[in-house]
Image 1 (tube, rainbow, N blue to C red):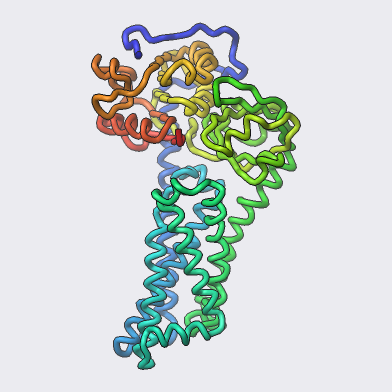
Image 2 (cartoon, helix red, strand yellow; image 1 turned 60 degrees about the horizontal axis):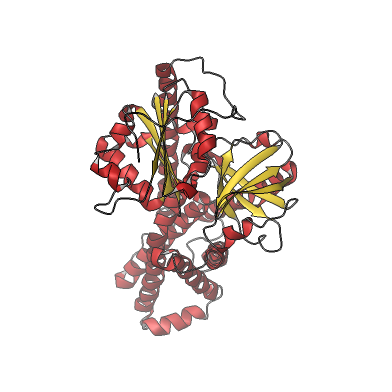
Length: 484
């Protein structure tokens, strides 16, 4: 239960391992600096969005400028040209999706990898519809122009060089999009979904030959051909560099290994890691990495897990809850196991702050990025307020460490323990709901605060919904979701 009159504050049993020096600038000065930084990120985000849509417009414009694109004759010509435009836009957006999923540092710094992946997913269905329209319209258009039916035209297209690869690419895209639908995704093991999702790279590659060899749209010596080859090279190059080469370089440079696995609650362990110059990873409190543990039972499964402490020069730590077969195996990792890392990623850091005050809300294993963020933040007394929530005593992961950090920084700490209310949809307990507890009562300066929320998705969505209804600006809300 939350005590809003007398916040629960625990004295530090020992000084935290990383305690930042007091900031030199006043709160309002720091807030103005953060707002300028936020406007800069927003401008770059808008620019990247414009460039993404402009790339599709350029693709269509180059086709319109090519010889023969305006010689539309009859129904067959109209259908064929519509099919060409649908295919050009779809292919361009597929490459945009690849770039969004490539974990490019610039995109992560200004947009956040979670938002980039959200946009990536949102483009999946529209791209599939465009690809289906591309195939159907071209088949109907060619058939109308030659006087053959759709079935005969399909058989004819299958006999054209490189067209079987085009149909294969379409089938792979269908498989990827269908496997990503929420209803299907929940029924698939992560490993099976991940393998299917990797087919998107194969689909992009097998679709390229028919673009270059069939018809005159991308004929030899045209600017269109130059554009598409360059677009493919950039998109696939970013994927290769940031999804494959960079993680290998990082892992070899830092030589990370497991030194201890510490149980901290039933089904929850902290994995202590050692390596070389881990402080040079550039990890900020609140960020996560994609970890791969090279043991016989875990090497094939990558785990996106937040740092639960800011890495030092030779040590780092992550804390993992058993949320399935893959994460359960991590509790049995042996010391000495080699670890590879993609990252760090995420904008759930002080880099995203724009307001004078700080409000941190965490539930369950969502404590991990919140605890690390609090450790990594220069704070004046009274600047930050922390709210921790757990269903029972067994879910109070890292609460003592967080209380020590709060006490050392002069931050206010509230705790709420109990099941969520049943009388209505709420992030609070039944007792707190009856007492009229709200975000505004816990965080008196809520509208002047950056609100960081991390926990199970349904719960954190309710916290964010109340914040929006209370009038917190969207740019001051930062949400990191955990599955359970």
